[in-house]
Length: 294
Image 1 (tube, rainbow, N blue to C red):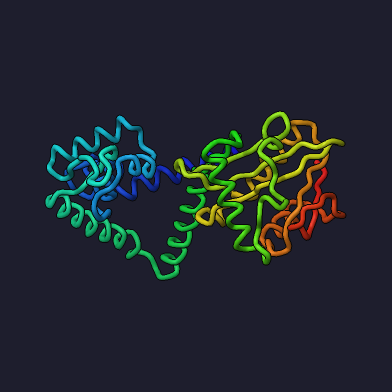
Image 2 (cartoon, rainbow, N blue to C red):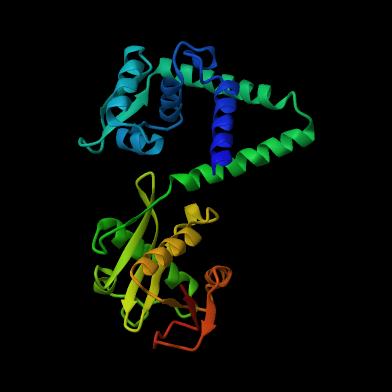
């Protein structure tokens, strides 16, 4: 881990220097990186952008975002006012001068990207671009939070609806939570069980639950990852967190059931060391039953 941390710090130093973010004037314009990035986010949005969306997208403190906006307003580049359709929403829009500055930033950003790639051979460019894509993917994965949540919370309800809707689309005969296979909220509420919800920039992107059972068992339920975050290892991470919490609760064996159409889920369970077992419940949608000793 020590060498990993040192490499991360070396990477951060190299990137910040190479991209010019150490300068007070980003891309040789008369403003720092924070203002330039904020202007870019506003300028690329047709009709303006919700201030709340900006704060979430950029993960900025409200006070700092307000200071950046005031600086851009004082330069005559943006205006901030109420949304035309909803007076409760504050919207930022570029002025004509702001649109021109946005276009200039776009042009200079393009030139900076060329300056980064042009000195490299075709093979080096391919390696760098592929590495950047991988780094971006992993950075996004590192932003995902997985926390215990109330099964009746808005985030938990959203995740449940999305999960059941996807089952309805993917299962050959559809899916009706009222028929069977859907765990009750009471069964995943402490002390009977628990629910984990994953969020990315305040958006609910995944969930997973445990229902504790007699005999040292716990059943894994509602494991779901949003399409927008698939490929980031979130399903594996949720499963690992559920297993850790089951172990801490004294559970000896976790088990689960799944439908034969969910081939990705089956592949994941096998990779995680689950073994197929005999049917242990009457879930009408299940074709396979798995267990793993902790």
